[in-house]
Amino acid sequence: MQIRVLFFGQLKDVCGRAEEGLEVPDGASMRFVFDHYAALYPRLSAMAKSVVMARNQEFAQAGELLAEGDEVALLPPVSGGSPLKIEDPEGHFFEITRQVIDVRAAEERLLQGIDGALVTFQGVVRNNTKGRATLRLDYECYEQMAIRQMAQLGREIAAQFAVSRVAIIHRLGTMEIGEASVAIFVASPHRKAAFDAAFEAINRLKRQVPIWKKEYFADGEVWVEGEWDDNAPRMA
Image 1 (cartoon, helix red, strand yellow):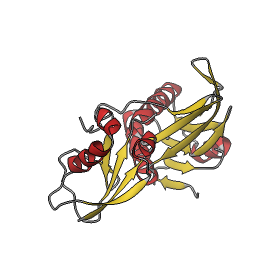
Image 2 (cartoon, one colour):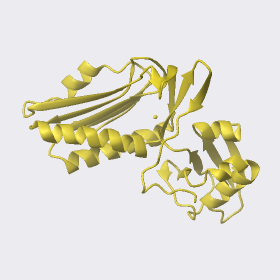
Image 3 (tube, helix red, strand yellow):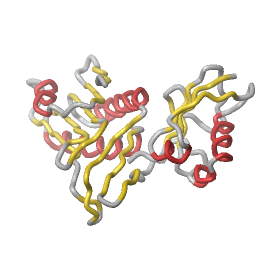
Image 4 (cartoon, one colour):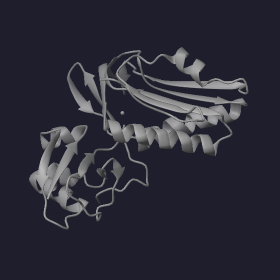
């Protein structure tokens, strides 16, 4: 049977491609796909403890069986055209965009009369990493999966904390020094819940949502290594 395999972040460099069709035998599992490419690319095999896989835009265990036409993605550790958007009836909203984030417009969209606090966090491109001068960053993601994961994360944050609305916007593409790559917005009747929810949201987003960044220096470039959440189904 035929499936489609996608590669993201540094795995595109390791495997030398962004996607390809793959013929797999009946009864093949996610493990079969990983082992197939690990045999071709020993560097991938060495990364097994940090690689996560997805099937049809959902995290998948190694033993999960494949079906004809499945879309399988190999995802390295997370470090993030027309925008993708999800808006909930409760007023939570989530976007992936290549445009500059309009912070004020997002704040006005989120705020209600019941709110006494509005916390906005922006993740901004800085000019160095551990003293090494940074020129710019480039972000890419598994877009359809990332927007769904962002929405799920935001809803869980809203349920966990006493807040009224949550929004997350993440940019893709090239970002210059001083530009915001991500913004978290939390509106709440009281300030403590809003601060706590925003802090939890950015920490979880960096571990759970399939978005990756490449950092460019004067003397080279590198995919930034991150770390998956403990619940993500690794290949080893």
